[in-house]
Image 1: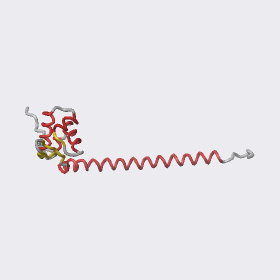
Image 2 (image 1 turned 30 degrees about the horizontal axis):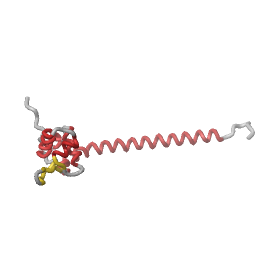
Image 3 (image 1 turned 30 degrees about the vertical axis):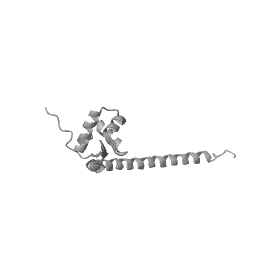
Image 4 (image 1 turned 45 degrees about the horizontal axis):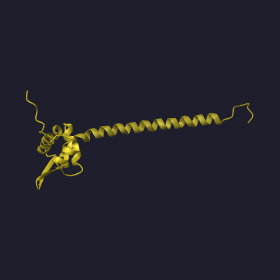
Length: 130
């Protein structure tokens, strides 16, 4: 059975950990293949292969600088991923909001319990001269 192409979209391209590592390295700015090989401790052919996949989906751009080819991150190409994650971000934020409400309730109950305990210990008992 033939393997599905890894270059069809951003999701498939970033599914591979080494490609995500390359993107992370390019956040700091342009880098040559040699610099990426050094930073990531991967073989040159492997880095070149991953850069090709990233370039095919528009996540990296390459420019010639003398004899070197410099690669840079094209962050706008991550927009489909960002849109997809936005749905989950809303869900996560709603859950955090519920957690914040619950923690506030627990804190209020704890404070109320402390006040009751203080009141009970500071009230003198009947028949006990103070």
